[in-house]
Length: 185
Image 1 (tube, rainbow, N blue to C red):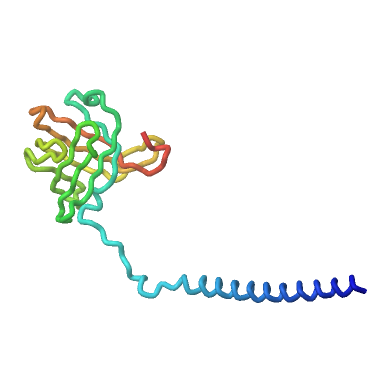
Image 2 (image 1 turned 180 degrees about the vertical axis):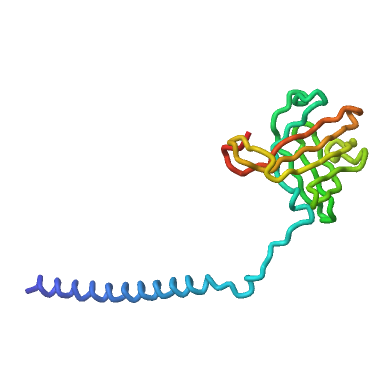
């Protein structure tokens, strides 16, 4: 008889625990459903547009190789990263920056975003070395490049003459980075 009494007490306790768990589960499910339905609300955001810089059509990270006047990779160069981006003033000028890699070019150029072209002033400040550089004939071609894995991407080309080698014009050519690992050099 004592065993039956203990057993019935355990069943009664477990039922109370189960009822409590059921209530908790119902409240949790209700809370999740409310969160799901209210999180899809777009009030105030349907007309939101991400602002573009004045040179966004030319801005990107690129894989480039500088070539010497004979058409060979300059000083044995291989692909390295070059970034084109707007300046803080966002006034139609663009910064060219190879982040101190290889030929060390960081300068500001004028752009024609509609024509996807750019060029700099003669003997403009080269910000990494403190010297000067003249950038000319800059052009971006949409869909004009091919990545390492064969994907179609944009291409870039421009000429640069540095103060440390006057009279020698290096031609930078390359393609836009895709962000895929198989396209990394």
